[in-house]
Length: 250
Length: 377
Picture 1 (spheres, rainbow over the protein chains, first blue to last red):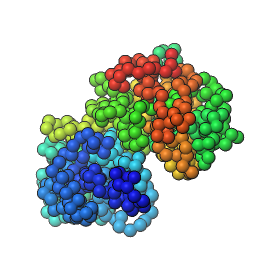
Picture 2 (cartoon, each protein chain N blue to C red; picture 1 turned 90 degrees about the vertical axis):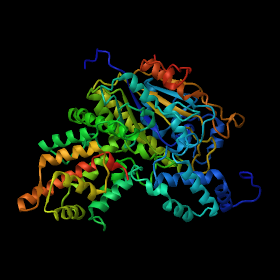
Picture 3 (tube, each protein chain N blue to C red; picture 1 turned 135 degrees about the vertical axis):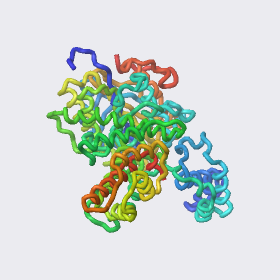
Picture 4 (cartoon, rainbow over the protein chains, first blue to last red; picture 1 turned 180 degrees about the horizontal axis):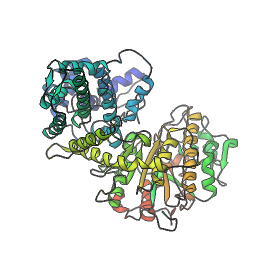
């Protein structure tokens, strides 16, 4: 006897029976939504708190059931949905996402080289010890990625990387900005926000970035000595952006 | 601080994450049912250190024996609650929030911190060593300093130094100003950023002021306990410390897994308490060691699966050592789904600590009134 079914079952039969439970589809779809679309409350709260977008979950559950539990079909529905396309910056990046997206941005880490041992520890410092979740539930996501220690670890890691003007991705950002020859404080801020993300920041945050840029005044690449300063200020602007709250979302 | 002055009581919580096996931690070595049920993972008689005529601890917990002999170790038997779930995350959540029925939003120690520092005057009232924030410490608006790595490196943007640093950190502070209408998560991040900036200035003195003859073992838990010692010894007004060790989820390979875990924990605790004593800072500290549940009575051939009733420990100079409560019966007819039936509510343990040690009214913190085992005066 297993969940109302009677018979002699092997492991695969058990999985078939489990998947047919309505709760199973709902659980999986809520995980998919939390991963790809927007942050949901923590898993232990799911039996009690309803999803932030009940209709979206219903849509996914329907696709799961109608396709006879085919994950590809569910994901096709998810990626083509309006709720997916409209959800930007509604998902707190996980430590793995922070580290990998930063390394892709700054470049130079495509092939194995020394130093990756320490690099591989970065998600751990941010609260996600890869392949070793705190319990079988996995990690608590969303806002719970953030505490004073993990926020420092996130900000410091990204800032160190985007502040390194020798890295190819950072050079590429500088080279793209440099084609303008000279940048006003507004152009520097908006250019950096665009190149590092794009990242959308609130008005107050933008004001602070702008105040910093105004301290530096116009940055230009017209002479070697000016170019050196311009490179440095661009890198510092990227570091400040990496330190914003907004940058923590993806 | 002179030793004669009354010092504020401090609590250190060490969480044994994963579900520690009660029966192999405090062993009822005369009970034939222990042997019957523990064919694969039972501790052989010659590896048990006797505490008294009924109970012993495995040899790999040797460093904790001295605390027992000195009368400074309280063993809390059968800890848990009725209808305990066998799920790690739900069980841990219940321990953290004292809410066995609904989902709690406030951690019990977060509530304690709010009582100690209602105006948020000290952002290092609570210091947690480890990369994630345990829910027991989380109450909206209550700051917690989370030290994920070495204490020496705690701080924002360490690569920016000199005059530039001051300016950049001021910008940072301004960008983390709470703003109206940006939502709960953004507000939470604003608080976290502001509090960590303040905490950084305070905490960085701790390792600088520290010197000790005590050698800590090279284990993650010992490193965390050393950080706690450094912070406590710096007299920064911290009252609540938190750390954890994992994973006690010994479904398979319990031997030697359980032994490695407990060696690390007991050696770390021993070094920690020695360090505090060396600096005359031990008297106002107690430690609570707990796990989300105990494990099944009968082993599974290589390990033990999730159970119910467990064991907790409280130790310290001011603790009245001894057994509190009774080990639940191992007789098959008394088990609940094959597990020890908890006979001491975990909120009882908290209540004694709150009432007798931290001098707070337990009821609003643990959501009710519970019997108080008398392990503190």
